[in-house]
Amino acid sequence: MSEILTSTTATTANTATTTSRPCPHCAAPIACDPRFTDWCPACEWNLAPAPDPARRRGARSRARVERLYDAMAARPAEAGQHRSGAWLAAMVLATAVNLVTLAVLAGSVWLLLAGWLGLKAVGVAGLGLAWVLRPRLGRWRATEPGELTPDRAPVLHAVAARVAAAVGTAAPDRIVMDHQYNASYARVGLRSRVRLTLGLPLWTALTGDERLALLGHELGHGGNGDQRRGFWLRTAQGALTEWLRLLLPYRGDRFRLRTARQSALDHLATLLLQVLAQPVLLLWTVLNRLTERSSQQAEYLADERAAAVASSAAAERMLAKLMLDRSVQVRLSQQRTAAQLRGRSGTVRGGQVEQTEQVEQFWTGLRGYLDSVPATERERRARLSALEMSAVDTTHPPTHLRVRMRAVRPARTAAVTVTAAEWAAVEAELAPARRRIGQRLLGW
Image (cartoon, rainbow, N blue to C red; front, side, top):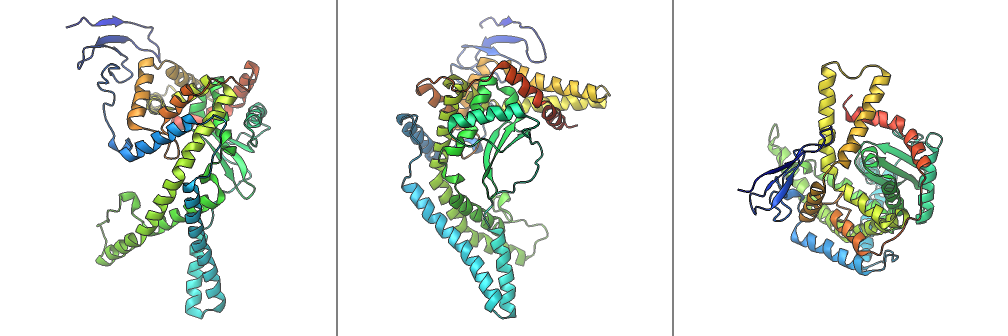
């Protein structure tokens, strides 16, 4: 047997003793870090130690996303969205759905005005149904938890405005910082004001130019032509979703009937609702399928804007760090458990100064941990993403394809730069958010 070679690095909170040993499958040398899964890059032994079939796409889904990747890779980077036959079919279907909602509203009003007493009761119920099916534009509140107002974070808003100008879209009206390893862009309310949400764990994981790439990607959604963000299609999808919620009270249980304390009449009513829901479920599935290509195409276009703002290299690194989400969740869980154990021993959560120091150590530890993730683990995450075709969510293309797209596109230089002094000012502006979100993640 080959001799096991051991090399030791400095042991800190974020580094560990690394070893090298032969792969049990092909005998190739593999680097081992006790914090991560042992695997073999040569034969991919133990690439996915606990496969999750639910995360893997079917053959047809894989073929669709790969065809879209090939089509986008063949197009010029500056090309925008184009209206296809799928778009026309989606608009026709959305129109039919929205007309049904309008018919429910109009019929209910007519019954209230012209019907006899019994029909007036039906009209009242119909108005309630029309209210449930109404368009969801989102409510723009005067204040929102986690909001970073321009007076409290002027430098961050100024940086975001510069990025928005570079991608040709509106500057965010509101910036919100939350606890997710993600970010999002939304237009809210009748005035379609822009809300940009940034996850502090993701923001912490990124360097300055990678943060610019993140801002460029999210604000790029303001002009990338995503069909699902349009009012008409969004209204139809929302109405179909509400129909399903009304008809499938047990949908989260995969249509299995609950037997406990249910009478035969309850079983019959549930079966009837499920039968009635099947056409709605079919329409919902078809509409999502028709708009899937446009939504994923919009993500590729947003990635192009990220590259234009911060450079191709920064955009690629930002996308690669999205594949570390599971590692981040494990690290956050470990830090929360350790903080709670220390809390029970009385070694944490002293005065305000001590709490602030502990929260800062939490964020410093998270950043150091991510910086210390070895290349072999990053490669494993990339290959696992390709194996599972995993994505941020169903509206996004698989993340590994987005990274690959950056490699085949011509290299772009940064259009927006931020000085070290500006980034330091942004960090100071985020101090209250770091303390608040850090305490939440630590379970305090």
